[in-house]
Amino acid sequence: MMTTSLLNEALPATHKLQHLHLVDKIYMLPTHAREKPPSEQLHLVGFNITYWPLWLQFTSLSLAIFVFYIGYGYMQELIFKLSGMRPFGVYLTLIQFIIYSICGWAEGTMYHERSRKIPIRVYFLLAFFTVLTMGLSNASVGYLNYPTQVIFKCCKLIPVLVGGIIIQGKRYGWLDASAAALMSIGLIMFVLADSHVSPNFDPRGYIMISGALIADAIIGNLQEKVMKKYGGSSNEMVFYSYSIGSVYILVITILTGEFHEAFAFFLNNPWKTYGYGLIFGFLGYLGVNVVITLIKVSGALVTVTVTTLRKALTIILSFVLFSKPFSVDYVWGGLTILFAIYLNLYSKNKSRWDAELKRIAAKVLRPLSKTKVFAKDDLFMARIILIVKDALTIRISMVTTSTSAAIVIQAFKKQGNGLPSIHFCDVLDHQ
Image (cartoon, rainbow, N blue to C red; front, top):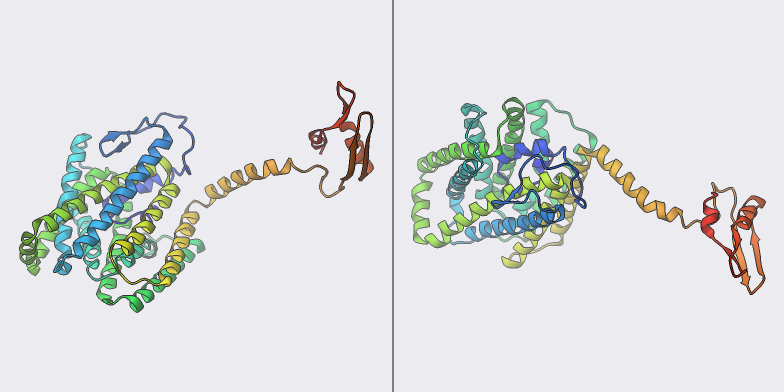
Protein backbone atom coordinates (compact mmCIF):
# COMPACT_ATOMS: atom_id res chain seq x y z
CA MET A 1 0.00 0.00 0.00
CA MET A 2 2.93 2.33 0.48
CA THR A 3 3.70 2.55 -3.23
CA THR A 4 0.07 3.10 -4.17
CA SER A 5 -0.06 6.03 -1.77
CA LEU A 6 2.89 7.66 -3.47
CA LEU A 7 2.83 6.94 -7.15
CA ASN A 8 0.12 8.70 -8.97
CA GLU A 9 -1.48 11.57 -10.46
CA ALA A 10 -4.31 10.18 -12.50
CA LEU A 11 -3.22 6.75 -11.32
CA PRO A 12 -6.37 4.66 -11.70
CA ALA A 13 -7.17 2.90 -8.47
CA THR A 14 -7.76 -0.36 -10.29
CA HIS A 15 -4.11 -0.57 -11.31
CA LYS A 16 -2.85 -0.27 -7.77
CA LEU A 17 -3.41 -3.92 -6.90
CA GLN A 18 -0.42 -4.85 -9.04
CA HIS A 19 1.81 -2.71 -6.87
CA LEU A 20 1.14 -5.02 -3.93
CA HIS A 21 3.22 -7.71 -5.63
CA LEU A 22 5.80 -5.36 -7.10
CA VAL A 23 6.93 -3.53 -3.99
CA ASP A 24 8.82 -6.63 -2.85
CA LYS A 25 11.00 -6.42 -5.98
CA ILE A 26 13.04 -3.33 -5.17
CA TYR A 27 16.30 -3.33 -7.13
CA MET A 28 17.56 0.28 -6.82
CA LEU A 29 18.76 2.04 -9.97
CA PRO A 30 19.50 -0.57 -12.64
CA THR A 31 23.18 -0.70 -13.67
CA HIS A 32 23.64 -4.29 -14.74
CA ALA A 33 21.79 -6.96 -16.68
CA ARG A 34 19.58 -9.48 -14.99
CA GLU A 35 21.07 -12.82 -14.19
CA LYS A 36 17.84 -14.68 -14.85
CA PRO A 37 15.62 -14.46 -17.93
CA PRO A 38 12.53 -12.25 -17.45
CA SER A 39 9.51 -14.08 -16.09
CA GLU A 40 7.00 -11.87 -17.92
CA GLN A 41 6.86 -9.72 -21.01
CA LEU A 42 7.38 -5.96 -20.72
CA HIS A 43 5.71 -3.54 -23.11
CA LEU A 44 5.96 0.18 -23.77
CA VAL A 45 3.14 1.58 -25.91
CA GLY A 46 2.75 -1.76 -27.66
CA PHE A 47 6.49 -2.36 -28.18
CA ASN A 48 8.07 -5.38 -26.53
CA ILE A 49 11.01 -4.10 -24.47
CA THR A 50 11.61 -7.31 -22.52
CA TYR A 51 15.05 -7.97 -24.00
CA TRP A 52 16.25 -4.39 -24.24
CA PRO A 53 19.30 -3.51 -22.11
CA LEU A 54 18.25 -2.57 -18.60
CA TRP A 55 19.58 0.98 -18.91
CA LEU A 56 17.58 1.49 -22.10
CA GLN A 57 14.41 0.14 -20.46
CA PHE A 58 14.85 2.53 -17.54
CA THR A 59 15.60 5.54 -19.75
CA SER A 60 12.71 4.88 -22.13
CA LEU A 61 10.17 4.29 -19.36
CA SER A 62 11.29 7.34 -17.38
CA LEU A 63 11.08 9.54 -20.45
CA ALA A 64 7.62 8.14 -21.22
CA ILE A 65 6.43 8.95 -17.69
CA PHE A 66 7.52 12.57 -18.08
CA VAL A 67 5.93 12.90 -21.52
CA PHE A 68 2.61 11.20 -20.72
CA TYR A 69 1.98 12.68 -17.27
CA ILE A 70 3.16 16.19 -18.04
CA GLY A 71 0.89 16.08 -21.08
CA TYR A 72 -1.90 14.66 -18.90
CA GLY A 73 -1.57 17.44 -16.33
CA TYR A 74 -1.32 20.12 -18.99
CA MET A 75 -4.46 18.92 -20.76
CA GLN A 76 -6.38 18.66 -17.48
CA GLU A 77 -5.56 22.23 -16.49
CA LEU A 78 -6.10 23.47 -20.05
CA ILE A 79 -9.61 22.01 -20.18
CA PHE A 80 -10.65 23.81 -17.01
CA LYS A 81 -9.27 27.07 -18.35
CA LEU A 82 -12.09 27.01 -20.92
CA SER A 83 -14.74 29.55 -20.02
CA GLY A 84 -17.78 27.80 -18.52
CA MET A 85 -16.05 24.42 -17.98
CA ARG A 86 -15.85 24.66 -14.18
CA PRO A 87 -19.14 22.81 -13.28
CA PHE A 88 -18.59 19.89 -15.68
CA GLY A 89 -15.80 17.91 -14.01
CA VAL A 90 -18.00 14.83 -13.54
CA TYR A 91 -18.89 14.78 -17.24
CA LEU A 92 -15.19 14.92 -18.07
CA THR A 93 -14.74 11.93 -15.76
CA LEU A 94 -17.39 10.07 -17.79
CA ILE A 95 -15.32 10.61 -20.92
CA GLN A 96 -12.20 9.45 -19.09
CA PHE A 97 -13.94 6.29 -17.82
CA ILE A 98 -15.14 5.39 -21.29
CA ILE A 99 -11.62 5.80 -22.69
CA TYR A 100 -10.11 3.68 -19.91
CA SER A 101 -12.75 0.98 -20.46
CA ILE A 102 -12.05 0.80 -24.18
CA CYS A 103 -8.28 0.74 -23.68
CA GLY A 104 -8.58 -1.92 -20.97
CA TRP A 105 -10.71 -4.10 -23.22
CA ALA A 106 -8.35 -3.63 -26.19
CA GLU A 107 -5.28 -4.46 -24.12
CA GLY A 108 -6.94 -7.51 -22.61
CA THR A 109 -7.91 -8.74 -26.07
CA MET A 110 -4.40 -8.10 -27.40
CA TYR A 111 -2.84 -10.22 -24.65
CA HIS A 112 -5.65 -12.83 -24.65
CA GLU A 113 -6.90 -12.09 -21.14
CA ARG A 114 -10.57 -13.01 -21.36
CA SER A 115 -11.50 -14.82 -18.16
CA ARG A 116 -12.87 -12.98 -15.11
CA LYS A 117 -11.60 -14.14 -11.72
CA ILE A 118 -13.21 -11.57 -9.42
CA PRO A 119 -16.99 -11.76 -8.78
CA ILE A 120 -19.04 -9.08 -10.51
CA ARG A 121 -20.57 -7.94 -7.21
CA VAL A 122 -17.10 -6.92 -6.04
CA TYR A 123 -16.67 -4.75 -9.11
CA PHE A 124 -19.92 -2.93 -8.37
CA LEU A 125 -18.43 -1.83 -5.06
CA LEU A 126 -15.00 -1.01 -6.46
CA ALA A 127 -16.53 0.94 -9.33
CA PHE A 128 -18.52 3.07 -6.89
CA PHE A 129 -15.42 4.21 -5.00
CA THR A 130 -13.48 4.61 -8.25
CA VAL A 131 -16.15 7.02 -9.46
CA LEU A 132 -15.90 8.95 -6.21
CA THR A 133 -12.12 9.29 -6.22
CA MET A 134 -11.68 10.20 -9.88
CA GLY A 135 -14.86 12.25 -10.19
CA LEU A 136 -14.07 14.38 -7.14
CA SER A 137 -10.43 14.68 -8.18
CA ASN A 138 -11.32 15.98 -11.65
CA ALA A 139 -14.03 18.26 -10.32
CA SER A 140 -11.64 19.79 -7.77
CA VAL A 141 -9.45 21.20 -10.56
CA GLY A 142 -12.18 23.73 -11.30
CA TYR A 143 -11.95 25.07 -7.74
CA LEU A 144 -8.30 24.51 -6.77
CA ASN A 145 -4.95 25.94 -7.69
CA TYR A 146 -3.61 23.06 -9.83
CA PRO A 147 -0.25 22.71 -7.99
CA THR A 148 -2.21 22.41 -4.74
CA GLN A 149 -4.21 19.54 -6.21
CA VAL A 150 -1.00 17.78 -7.24
CA ILE A 151 0.42 18.19 -3.73
CA PHE A 152 -2.75 16.75 -2.20
CA LYS A 153 -2.45 13.71 -4.45
CA CYS A 154 1.06 13.14 -3.10
CA CYS A 155 -0.40 12.76 0.40
CA LYS A 156 -2.54 9.66 -0.02
CA LEU A 157 -0.56 8.06 2.78
CA ILE A 158 -2.70 9.86 5.37
CA PRO A 159 -6.09 8.34 4.44
CA VAL A 160 -4.41 5.05 3.52
CA LEU A 161 -3.06 4.70 7.07
CA VAL A 162 -6.45 5.52 8.54
CA GLY A 163 -8.19 3.14 6.13
CA GLY A 164 -5.71 0.36 6.89
CA ILE A 165 -6.37 0.69 10.62
CA ILE A 166 -10.17 0.77 10.25
CA ILE A 167 -10.71 -1.70 7.40
CA GLN A 168 -7.90 -4.22 7.91
CA GLY A 169 -6.92 -3.65 11.52
CA LYS A 170 -3.32 -2.90 10.58
CA ARG A 171 -0.74 -1.39 12.90
CA TYR A 172 1.83 1.13 11.77
CA GLY A 173 5.20 2.10 13.23
CA TRP A 174 6.49 5.49 14.32
CA LEU A 175 8.13 6.11 10.94
CA ASP A 176 4.77 5.84 9.15
CA ALA A 177 3.13 8.04 11.77
CA SER A 178 5.94 10.60 11.44
CA ALA A 179 5.58 10.60 7.65
CA ALA A 180 1.83 11.18 7.94
CA ALA A 181 2.39 14.01 10.43
CA LEU A 182 4.94 15.68 8.14
CA MET A 183 2.56 15.36 5.20
CA SER A 184 -0.15 17.03 7.24
CA ILE A 185 2.21 19.88 8.11
CA GLY A 186 3.22 20.27 4.46
CA LEU A 187 -0.42 20.33 3.37
CA ILE A 188 -1.25 22.98 5.96
CA MET A 189 1.63 25.13 4.68
CA PHE A 190 0.41 24.73 1.11
CA VAL A 191 -3.21 25.52 1.94
CA LEU A 192 -2.26 28.59 3.97
CA ALA A 193 -0.07 29.85 1.13
CA ASP A 194 -2.91 29.22 -1.31
CA SER A 195 -5.40 31.13 0.83
CA HIS A 196 -3.06 34.13 1.02
CA VAL A 197 -2.08 34.47 -2.64
CA SER A 198 -4.90 32.86 -4.64
CA PRO A 199 -7.47 35.41 -5.82
CA ASN A 200 -10.10 32.68 -6.34
CA PHE A 201 -9.64 30.67 -3.14
CA ASP A 202 -12.61 28.30 -2.82
CA PRO A 203 -12.82 25.79 0.06
CA ARG A 204 -15.05 23.52 -2.04
CA GLY A 205 -11.97 22.42 -3.93
CA TYR A 206 -10.31 21.21 -0.73
CA ILE A 207 -13.44 19.34 0.29
CA MET A 208 -13.55 17.61 -3.10
CA ILE A 209 -9.90 16.57 -3.19
CA SER A 210 -10.05 15.39 0.45
CA GLY A 211 -13.09 13.26 -0.40
CA ALA A 212 -11.22 11.87 -3.40
CA LEU A 213 -8.29 10.84 -1.19
CA ILE A 214 -10.57 9.16 1.35
CA ALA A 215 -12.34 7.20 -1.39
CA ASP A 216 -8.99 6.24 -2.86
CA ALA A 217 -7.80 4.92 0.50
CA ILE A 218 -10.93 2.77 0.74
CA ILE A 219 -10.34 1.45 -2.78
CA GLY A 220 -6.74 0.53 -2.01
CA ASN A 221 -7.61 -1.43 1.11
CA LEU A 222 -10.54 -3.17 -0.59
CA GLN A 223 -8.38 -4.11 -3.55
CA GLU A 224 -5.76 -5.60 -1.26
CA LYS A 225 -8.34 -7.87 0.35
CA VAL A 226 -9.87 -8.78 -3.01
CA MET A 227 -6.51 -9.51 -4.58
CA LYS A 228 -5.50 -11.81 -1.76
CA LYS A 229 -8.76 -13.72 -2.08
CA TYR A 230 -9.42 -13.87 -5.84
CA GLY A 231 -6.41 -12.64 -7.80
CA GLY A 232 -7.05 -11.06 -11.20
CA SER A 233 -5.13 -9.03 -13.76
CA SER A 234 -4.98 -5.26 -13.97
CA ASN A 235 -6.66 -5.33 -17.39
CA GLU A 236 -9.60 -7.22 -15.92
CA MET A 237 -9.87 -4.68 -13.10
CA VAL A 238 -9.69 -1.74 -15.49
CA PHE A 239 -12.29 -3.06 -17.89
CA TYR A 240 -14.93 -4.06 -15.34
CA SER A 241 -14.40 -1.26 -12.82
CA TYR A 242 -14.41 1.52 -15.39
CA SER A 243 -17.17 0.03 -17.52
CA ILE A 244 -19.48 -0.26 -14.51
CA GLY A 245 -18.26 3.13 -13.30
CA SER A 246 -19.22 4.66 -16.64
CA VAL A 247 -22.81 3.51 -16.09
CA TYR A 248 -22.78 4.99 -12.58
CA ILE A 249 -21.57 8.37 -13.84
CA LEU A 250 -24.03 8.38 -16.72
CA VAL A 251 -26.93 7.83 -14.32
CA ILE A 252 -25.61 10.46 -11.87
CA THR A 253 -25.15 13.13 -14.54
CA ILE A 254 -28.61 12.47 -16.00
CA LEU A 255 -30.30 12.66 -12.60
CA THR A 256 -28.48 15.87 -11.64
CA GLY A 257 -29.05 17.48 -15.03
CA GLU A 258 -25.32 17.88 -15.66
CA PHE A 259 -25.35 15.52 -18.63
CA HIS A 260 -27.63 17.69 -20.79
CA GLU A 261 -25.88 20.93 -19.85
CA ALA A 262 -22.40 19.48 -20.33
CA PHE A 263 -23.35 17.77 -23.59
CA ALA A 264 -24.59 21.07 -25.00
CA PHE A 265 -21.51 22.92 -23.72
CA PHE A 266 -19.12 20.38 -25.23
CA LEU A 267 -20.95 20.47 -28.58
CA ASN A 268 -20.45 24.23 -28.83
CA ASN A 269 -16.71 23.70 -29.13
CA PRO A 270 -16.10 19.98 -29.72
CA TRP A 271 -12.45 20.32 -30.75
CA LYS A 272 -11.43 21.94 -27.47
CA THR A 273 -13.73 19.90 -25.23
CA TYR A 274 -14.03 16.38 -26.61
CA GLY A 275 -10.66 16.76 -28.33
CA TYR A 276 -8.88 17.79 -25.14
CA GLY A 277 -10.81 15.17 -23.16
CA LEU A 278 -9.78 12.39 -25.55
CA ILE A 279 -6.09 13.32 -25.31
CA PHE A 280 -6.40 13.74 -21.54
CA GLY A 281 -7.88 10.27 -21.01
CA PHE A 282 -5.55 8.49 -23.41
CA LEU A 283 -2.41 10.04 -21.91
CA GLY A 284 -3.62 9.10 -18.42
CA TYR A 285 -4.11 5.47 -19.39
CA LEU A 286 -0.70 5.25 -21.06
CA GLY A 287 0.95 6.88 -18.06
CA VAL A 288 -0.55 4.35 -15.67
CA ASN A 289 0.78 1.40 -17.65
CA VAL A 290 4.25 2.92 -17.91
CA VAL A 291 4.42 3.46 -14.14
CA ILE A 292 3.51 -0.18 -13.49
CA THR A 293 6.13 -1.36 -15.99
CA LEU A 294 8.83 0.84 -14.44
CA ILE A 295 8.09 -0.67 -11.03
CA LYS A 296 8.64 -4.13 -12.53
CA VAL A 297 11.93 -3.04 -14.07
CA SER A 298 13.48 -0.82 -11.40
CA GLY A 299 11.49 -1.21 -8.20
CA ALA A 300 9.50 1.17 -6.06
CA LEU A 301 12.33 3.48 -4.96
CA VAL A 302 13.43 4.42 -8.45
CA THR A 303 9.83 4.77 -9.63
CA VAL A 304 8.92 7.06 -6.75
CA THR A 305 11.96 9.18 -7.51
CA VAL A 306 11.04 9.49 -11.19
CA THR A 307 7.37 10.27 -10.54
CA THR A 308 8.25 12.75 -7.79
CA LEU A 309 10.58 14.61 -10.14
CA ARG A 310 7.84 14.55 -12.75
CA LYS A 311 5.34 16.04 -10.31
CA ALA A 312 7.82 18.74 -9.34
CA LEU A 313 8.31 19.60 -13.01
CA THR A 314 4.53 19.56 -13.54
CA ILE A 315 4.08 22.09 -10.73
CA ILE A 316 6.84 24.32 -12.10
CA LEU A 317 5.37 24.21 -15.62
CA SER A 318 1.94 24.99 -14.21
CA PHE A 319 3.27 28.24 -12.74
CA VAL A 320 5.14 29.04 -15.97
CA LEU A 321 2.49 28.13 -18.57
CA PHE A 322 -0.59 29.22 -16.63
CA SER A 323 -0.20 32.56 -14.93
CA LYS A 324 -0.84 32.27 -11.19
CA PRO A 325 0.47 33.90 -7.99
CA PHE A 326 3.45 32.33 -6.24
CA SER A 327 4.63 32.16 -2.63
CA VAL A 328 7.85 30.74 -1.16
CA ASP A 329 5.64 28.84 1.29
CA TYR A 330 4.76 26.55 -1.62
CA VAL A 331 8.43 25.52 -1.76
CA TRP A 332 8.72 24.81 1.97
CA GLY A 333 5.45 22.88 2.02
CA GLY A 334 6.51 20.85 -1.00
CA LEU A 335 9.91 19.99 0.48
CA THR A 336 8.28 18.89 3.73
CA ILE A 337 5.96 16.55 1.84
CA LEU A 338 8.85 15.26 -0.27
CA PHE A 339 10.78 14.32 2.87
CA ALA A 340 7.68 12.61 4.27
CA ILE A 341 7.30 10.54 1.10
CA TYR A 342 10.80 9.13 1.37
CA LEU A 343 10.48 8.63 5.11
CA ASN A 344 7.44 6.45 4.45
CA LEU A 345 9.26 4.61 1.68
CA TYR A 346 12.18 3.97 4.03
CA SER A 347 9.88 2.62 6.73
CA LYS A 348 8.51 0.00 4.32
CA ASN A 349 11.97 -1.15 3.20
CA LYS A 350 14.13 -0.41 6.23
CA SER A 351 16.10 -3.67 6.33
CA ARG A 352 16.84 -3.59 2.61
CA TRP A 353 17.78 0.07 2.60
CA ASP A 354 20.03 -0.37 5.64
CA ALA A 355 21.81 -3.27 3.98
CA GLU A 356 22.20 -1.32 0.75
CA LEU A 357 23.50 1.75 2.59
CA LYS A 358 26.05 -0.40 4.42
CA ARG A 359 27.19 -1.91 1.14
CA ILE A 360 27.59 1.53 -0.43
CA ALA A 361 29.40 2.86 2.64
CA ALA A 362 31.80 -0.09 2.55
CA LYS A 363 32.61 0.62 -1.10
CA VAL A 364 33.24 4.29 -0.37
CA LEU A 365 35.35 3.75 2.76
CA ARG A 366 37.44 0.87 1.42
CA PRO A 367 39.67 2.99 -0.87
CA LEU A 368 39.93 5.65 1.83
CA SER A 369 41.30 3.10 4.30
CA LYS A 370 44.10 2.27 1.87
CA THR A 371 45.44 5.84 1.99
CA LYS A 372 46.51 5.44 5.65
CA VAL A 373 50.28 4.99 5.98
CA PHE A 374 51.06 4.38 9.64
CA ALA A 375 48.04 3.77 11.83
CA LYS A 376 46.70 0.78 13.66
CA ASP A 377 44.03 1.11 16.34
CA ASP A 378 45.67 4.34 17.53
CA LEU A 379 48.64 2.34 18.92
CA PHE A 380 51.26 4.28 17.03
CA MET A 381 51.69 7.20 14.68
CA ALA A 382 54.62 7.63 12.34
CA ARG A 383 55.55 10.74 10.48
CA ILE A 384 58.27 11.02 7.89
CA ILE A 385 59.99 14.36 8.51
CA LEU A 386 62.63 14.40 5.85
CA ILE A 387 63.66 12.18 2.97
CA VAL A 388 66.78 13.08 1.09
CA LYS A 389 67.59 10.72 -1.68
CA ASP A 390 70.88 10.79 -3.66
CA ALA A 391 72.96 8.35 -5.59
CA LEU A 392 74.00 6.18 -2.66
CA THR A 393 72.25 7.26 0.55
CA ILE A 394 68.85 7.97 1.97
CA ARG A 395 68.33 9.69 5.30
CA ILE A 396 65.07 9.24 7.08
CA SER A 397 64.14 11.16 10.19
CA MET A 398 60.97 9.94 11.77
CA VAL A 399 59.00 9.83 14.98
CA THR A 400 57.71 6.29 15.45
CA THR A 401 57.72 3.22 17.62
CA SER A 402 60.17 0.41 17.23
CA THR A 403 57.44 -1.78 15.73
CA SER A 404 56.54 0.67 12.99
CA ALA A 405 60.24 1.39 12.37
CA ALA A 406 60.86 -2.28 11.74
CA ILE A 407 57.99 -2.34 9.27
CA VAL A 408 59.36 0.70 7.46
CA ILE A 409 62.82 -0.82 7.29
CA GLN A 410 61.35 -3.94 5.69
CA ALA A 411 59.75 -1.73 3.06
CA PHE A 412 63.12 -0.51 1.80
CA LYS A 413 64.24 -2.66 -1.07
CA LYS A 414 67.21 -2.44 -3.32
CA GLN A 415 66.35 -2.06 -6.99
CA GLY A 416 68.48 -2.97 -9.98
CA ASN A 417 70.26 0.38 -10.14
CA GLY A 418 71.28 0.18 -6.50
CA LEU A 419 68.98 2.98 -5.39
CA PRO A 420 66.81 2.37 -2.35
CA SER A 421 63.02 2.82 -2.56
CA ILE A 422 60.10 2.76 -0.13
CA HIS A 423 56.70 1.28 -0.93
CA PHE A 424 53.94 2.38 1.38
CA CYS A 425 51.77 -0.47 0.18
CA ASP A 426 54.27 -2.86 1.78
CA VAL A 427 53.70 -1.11 5.07
CA LEU A 428 49.93 -1.29 4.71
CA ASP A 429 50.10 -5.02 4.13
CA HIS A 430 51.41 -5.37 7.67
CA GLN A 431 48.72 -3.27 9.34
